[in-house]
Image 1 (cartoon, one colour):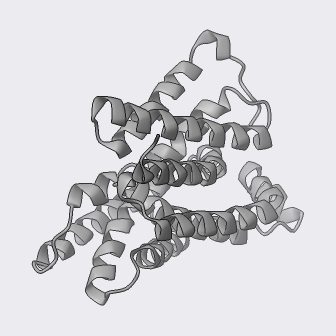
Image 2 (cartoon, rainbow, N blue to C red):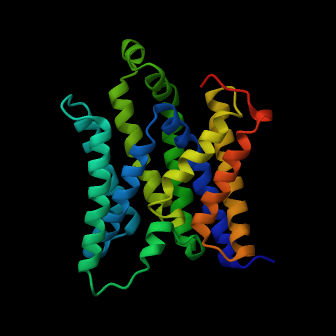
Length: 266
């Protein structure tokens, strides 16, 4: 019989994996892996803000990540700034500022490793409600804009000609990404969120023949990584968050085998 804390960890991880799958696909299609990394690093600054203002951590992380996401979108449209330089600048700056702010809060005792790498075993009932409630809301919005967002991803020029408003879709997508990162931070930590987004999606790309199928397969592989990682963590007494990511890596390596060599068109 599973302990309550382990069952809550399983439910939390599964909820995050289901949400992360479709978003990870868009990150892979848009080649935005470093963008997700930048937003996740901003999460640490959000934690510092939540402690300073005594507000909900998820809300603070979402606010900071959303602000940074909008800033990235706006600045990336300026030809004088290259995308990779801008992402590197904001990513490391947000992480460094967050760590410096936390170091000044000498009255706060916290597990920094838990923030960086997650503490899924500490998930409570209120966290589960936020994960499933927030995750369902985010997926519903993504489902509503799926066609227009995919069109903007494949060909922004054609999408604009058809009235899909690619710039608006990009803004909505990055705000949804900020919400996903805020929801997922406690489960896998700010440094490992991007891995959980990218690895299942990258593996699903070789196992799928269409975008919708790839999104479903990515969610399924994410769930498998969560279950495998948590049970591996229980068996070998290893950290839970990194164990989930290692399991996701193993699934990706398996997908590289020649038997799974069919390459999709997405």
